[in-house]
Length: 227
Image 1 (spheres, one colour):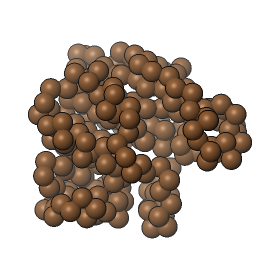
Image 2 (spheres, helix red, strand yellow):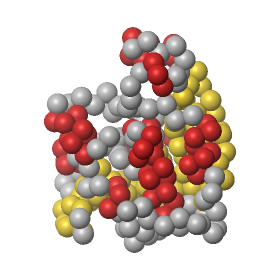
Image 3 (cartoon, helix red, strand yellow):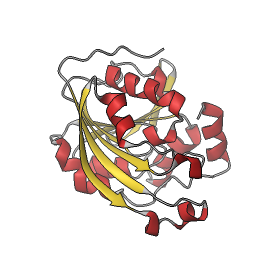
Image 4 (spheres, one colour):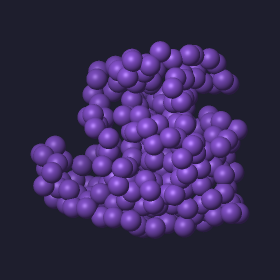
């Protein structure tokens, strides 16, 4: 999905992907990343997720990136956080109370922007992208992060022909293929969630699983930033 798609979704308030509560997998499996208190945490394609506030409550400084200025402004307004705003390269950067959101394109981030990040929560990023963008996303993520960084990844697994994403189905073999050259991929949990998701059932989905992965970056990475 390209920028215009997401700008339109936010302008029309078509944001069914937004969750009003903290993602339960985050609070359950974040400890598996062994991110020390005070570590810098990264939330790609963050929207206005309340998960950033939860991460901050755990003692982390938080960095997000989001292409929609409406989403960024809504996050700080809804949490009553007056943000300072500055320009950094191609980004407008909003910051308050240890939470910093870069408003702009994920692919414009550089390793310097993510300096100090050691842990990542990817709930709605990889699954938001069509197949032709996922390999570029994974390569860029690996180029951005330092060795030994860890990612908590939430992915959907369903018959892709039964529904047009987003969110897209990203099966285990694809996660492995996207990240195996630069990461150790560990499956932490699988949940059958079809009974809990009437929206997906209404679209004709016959099988729906959420899979939770931990990605641990190797000490020696072979990736460079995607152009």
